Image 1: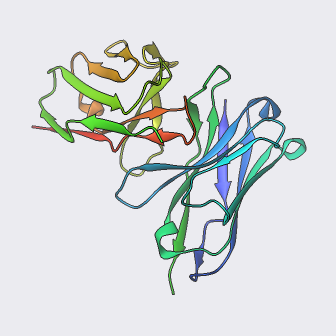
Image 2: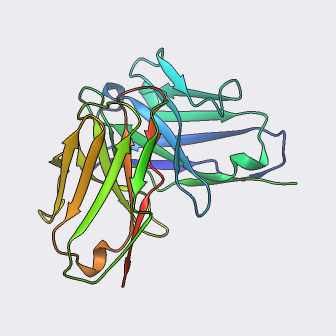
Length: 120
Length: 107
């Protein structure tokens, strides 16, 4: 069974930093593109960042470029999102997600989400 | 950026009725479009990938069609558990984008 479990969500002040983690199990983690998607309370889904299997190829949404950094540790079956210079508008539930192993693979599995609140 | 537009924003129907949801892309995404269902307090669940392929375990009443810029999700006969928000999603071009969602609620 594929499982993605996020951790690290917290209340943080504007300008602060936070690191989210995602523990993957039930599949060969090193073989998949992984991604972070966020959802503002009561709103829609926003893709944040994606990372290739080898960790070298990375893509970011313009809204987080230069502030967020995605990384992975294939030996630990873990995905990370380092968030710097956090703003109130970054408040959201952050989902770790796996992309399907196919051309232009869409997301097939999601974690349960981690809540990040940015407020003074 | 490829913008996905979903219509209608809200669809009010009764159990047993047919639901037809639309997703339009601002430029072609070929067949690389997915549909998700999300219920309150839960993560999204994959229903359809590559425009028309049902994900594992998804009931046959859910079907997807389309290619290029126009896509449709059809629920042939609504069950009580189908009342939820539905999102479309493209991974054909960076940045990855999602539609704003269609809420299917009980009439």
